[in-house]
Image (cartoon, rainbow, N blue to C red; front, side):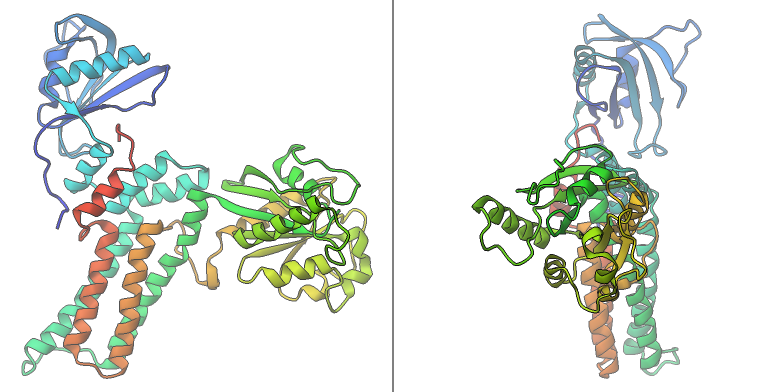
Amino acid sequence: MLAKMQSDGDTIAAIATPPGIGAIGIVRFSGSEAKGILARMVQPLSPRFKDFRPWQLHRARALDWHGTALDDVLAVFMPGPQTFTGEDTAEIQCHGGPVVVQAILESVLRHGARQAQRGEFTRRAFMNGRIDLSQAEAVAELVAAPSREALRYGLNRLDGLLGQRIRELAAKLEGLRTSLCLAVDFPEEETEVLEPLALSAAVDEAIGALQRLLAGSRRANVMQQGALVVLAGAVNAGKSSLLNALLGRNRALVTAIPGTTRDYLEEACDLMGVPVRLIDTAGLRRGGEAGLEAVERLGMVRSREKLAEADAILLVLDGARLGDEGAAALSCPDPAAEEVLNAVGATPMLVVWNKCDVCMPTVFPPRWLEKQSCCAVSALSGAHVEELAAMLRALLLSSTGGEPVEDGLAPNARQSLALENALEELQALREDVLAGQPYDCCAVRLEMACEHLGDVTGVSSPAEVLNSIFAQFCIGK
């Protein structure tokens, strides 16, 4: 196991603030020589200074390796193990000019530290048992968070909520495995052994817990990568106007001329804390593509390609053209809408009845939409666009298959793969139990499931996996 291993004792250093000019720059160093290096390279300005009091900022002059003053700084020493890395750590907070910050880092290195590698501070925190691997990954995800919601999910993982759930589940599975091993090793002893039905019920409970965790993986992908939302429908349905309304600015060209949008237009926006890429596509024509210009035909091909790539689809209907009669129809009266409905498959979709200021039908949602989510808006006036945005956000954050989601817990792609592997073992175990397989075989399944869970927190992760994860960090983290 790699958890709680100590570092080699050398002291690492790096600039902890972004490159460029800023008000403040921070040079951080961690390791057994952190306090000694700090004492050699800063000259406290207080006449009452005797020693670096832990966790207290001291105003000082930073010196280079020749003793020449570099900057007026604030210096702090933080003793381990109650630091982020679990080691003695020091920071020098200087003025944020690149030359100043680089000169101070060079002085730290010349006084005995070495340049930190990517993610090495966080890796030391993991190796010294300060955080588990899911928390370590959350550090990088917080730094790169593209939205407030991504921050929330990342902070929950950093607080250890995901790791706590995994450890609790692993402990229950380990308890089951111990019980099975006792029954196999000491069959003549009076040990309490779970009956097959009770064992199957316990496995089912663990399967449910894993499924709830995995239901949040789609949320994690949406939060970190952003969702691709395609606006589709017939020409002149108001897709470009709706794009402008969701963006809050006039980005797409809007005219009364059919086929104004010839190619797709992509724009990024923050949808109430969720990063989204909106794509306005060329309208699909009634009666097919016969007689259309080559450019418009190509635009329709692109529209269909984007539909296949979408994380969610907004099917925009021309309410003014469909009217009351179109809403009351038993079958879809719009060929373009029918094409989209037939093409979406399992892709989440929200149907938008546009131009409700011109016609708000008495039958709503339209009868032919069956169970599709539907809302009515006026993209031109902005009426109900906020309600549409809220519905789209909920659609993007909903789980696939309708499973309940552990709120605030969203495993990333690597963690989800480990959870899926554990789930497969447990599902196979349930079948083995019901089929009457020997308990020693069942115990092997439990052991493998626990090992996959350990991959999430890093208990059983090999060195090459750790190297791959921490290589994605910035040097100062």
